[in-house]
Image: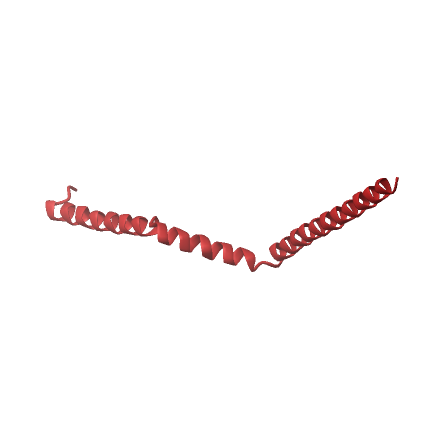
Length: 91
């Protein structure tokens, strides 16, 4: 049975409203400020996970250890150079 023109027009208008609503939602989601807020929320949620915190703590410990090692090694080299200069100056 063929549909009448009024039914077809109502369907077209309903579809247009749905499409407009979908486009509005997509436009809202793709705004840079909303994208930044979403990224911040995701990063914050990720940082709240205990596994991520443990990994970050481990990385921080390695970095601190490397810095301390480098400083100690640099001081030892400086002291060794001073000792060599002192020995050479005594000649």
